[in-house]
Image 1 (tube, one colour):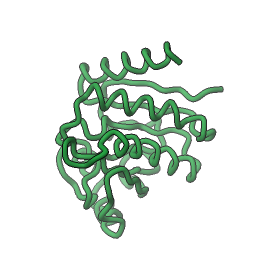
Image 2: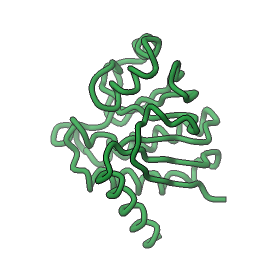
Image 3: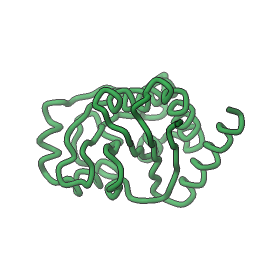
Image 4: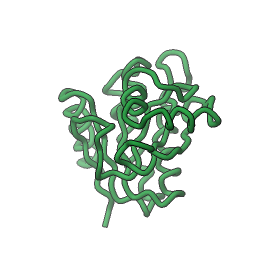
Length: 174
């Protein structure tokens, strides 16, 4: 059976049926705004302490910690590229998704929830970010047979609709 890929509007910190959530992290893996802030607030101070020895990370890199007070087992932290600064941006963004899925596969994680990495404060154009994210996940999943579900959890309805449309277009071409 092929893995399920789904796109929905919601709160990345409230995905109780998912084993690992992905943090759109900063290089120092510290609490911040957006996804990182929401996950750190929900996980509690233990997450910040667990992240410190793993920092700094580079754009495209992914690291794993426990999820602490989150309803998940793990948090996979990815540093997305800052658009117009970190190049090649598309390759670095794709690396985030590839490396997160590879970590999940290595750790026997069957379900992963992603935010829209780099498309908030890091300025990545949403359409390009969605296309890169979904095409990379679709292309990488055949190499990750243990992953059964990938969920994109988007902050607002417009982002959720954009991701769903992009996924449908990829599957139609498929």
